[in-house]
Image (cartoon, rainbow, N blue to C red):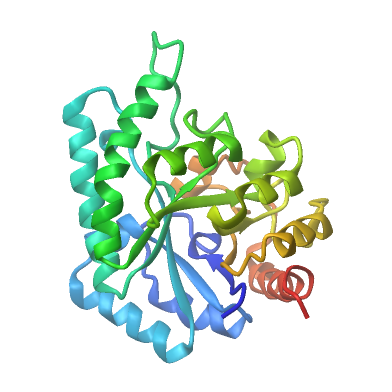
Length: 290
């Protein structure tokens, strides 16, 4: 499917750990082509549950992708080798779980940890960058064998320190040099860090594997001031065919609200499905060629 339009399940939840099954039919009913799930949570479920989710998605005609942010205990960029190796082992478990479900992309902070700050006493990120590259050079071939892609997310400076711009991510994936390691850009983070949203997308070019969508306040697309026409032109210019996955966060409370900094209700609970349905239609109209 050309530019499938998806949504991250946590739009509807206050906790990362959730039953994913109800969201499959909900995504289909609201007009989405794809549902993004939490890779680490799935890896902690048993095989029977994972296959049940995959079967439900196949039956509904819904594609699956996976997102996550590694916890600090599994920091793949840590200069503490024990921590780094623990992270590599944990990521292999996650990759195997997704491979068991037929493979697909795992996007997010798969190269460090989230939320993450430069270690105290450190003045430059080069040592952590080298540790991250060491980890990814081991994980990428393993992922390739499992039919899994690892998409490193470019994240704003307030949530992570390692890769804040598309240029940094492009240098990173070039250093990894694997078809299993590419880039995820996110309009929310780009709005903070990039001089030009269009320029960042053009710069990523064929290494752009997926695009997360959201307004500057993380509301669904079409509700704010994001320059969607500019974004569409840039996607067309690089012949982007990958998934367009909205990642709105609108509800305070719980682990999700705390982690992403939602301190006020941005959308009433009763209207969330309707808002998502309108956003799906908006993205299909504005970001996909006719």
